[in-house]
Image 1 (tube, one colour):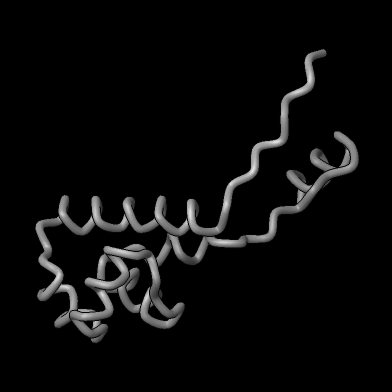
Image 2 (tube, rainbow, N blue to C red):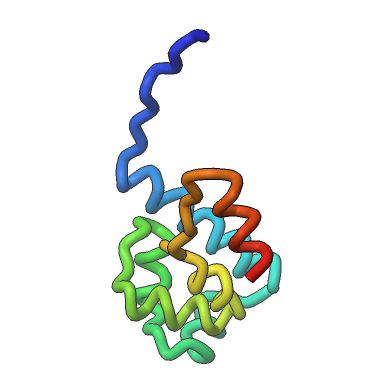
Length: 96
């Protein structure tokens, strides 16, 4: 079996990727930065900075996610998934 080299991703790369997704969603929904500011309560300057640099407070990110109806996506962030040790555990869990 061929070993794969470890892939390192910086926090900044992740930050920019999430920012790009956010911009795409906002634009697909035809919501301007100014309108998003009005419906989310996040300042227009903060939204502009976020979309340019990826920097935003977590509280503001939550407000934006709620305003864009992305709460379920945010709620699934860091969701704990049970790790099974055997097939028996999977079967027992499905029966309960």
